[in-house]
Amino acid sequence: MTISYLVTHSGGFHADELLSSVVLTRLYPDAEIRRTRDRDWLTPAEDKIIYDVGGDYNADAQIFDHHQRPGPLRDDEQPYSSFGLIWAHYGRQYLTDLNVPEADIDAIHASFDKRFVLPIDLLDNGAMEPSVAGPLSALTLPALLGSLKPVFDDTSPTADDDAFMAALPIARSFVEANIANLAAKARAKSIVVDAIAAAGDSAILELPMGMPFASALDEADAGHILFMVTPRGSDWTLNGIKLSRDTFDQRADLPAAWAGLTDADLEQASGVKGAKFCHSKRFIAVADSRDAIMEMAAIAVTSLTPE
Image (tube, rainbow, N blue to C red):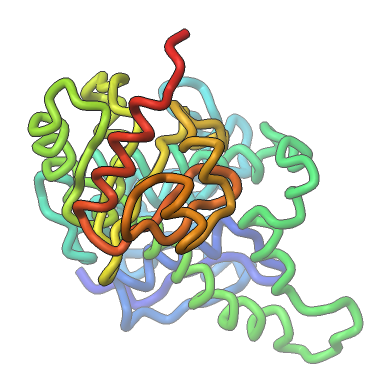
């Protein structure tokens, strides 16, 4: 079966059909995007995928709208937008096309759905208010994509379609970057798990390079690990570990006497030859060798006052 047309509504666009188009144009690069409300175009056919328009949800007929009542719901009763429907039916195929390893597809599909797709669905259906983002509400992805719409006094008859097509590669970059990060996290997990095992009872985790580590650390229940050491170019870094991704608070801070110091001043304060830098917020320090950074890490651990 050849898909020749990807059909969505004309006029102003929203994040859900734009992001749906990201997935579908990857899978069907030769298909033409047709933005219309013409009833003939909204009649299902084997060579069309119709989404965010048409008043029906029928995967067998390749029509994925959510505006009808009752609208389609997830198993947990939360509403789908067209993006959620397209992701549910085509997301795994999309991940395969992006060369995500087969063993990781289900986990990445679910993770992307939870962290990226579901918020779009909820916002588009009015099930979540943009105000939940507080002062950052104008910087959410739906708001940023919406800002790419033509201005009110652009009188070009193709203004909406032109803006949609210009926004599509921008939306694509966000989707593909998120998928790439999830895939990288999956690749990093086994490395981090091995490093945790190698650390044993130590409070210091050494990794061979910077990589996603927080989820593996949480799953391993390795609460005893307080600092992380990694090489960075010709230097080495000592990092604190945040309590969660939602805070800057750490399991432990670097010594207060190091805060904001560099080079000779930091060497004197720490007693470590090769110490180069410590951030004033005490979440990262840098040294010129592994021996130096490991010595700083040991000092940081022993300087902690037991509660």
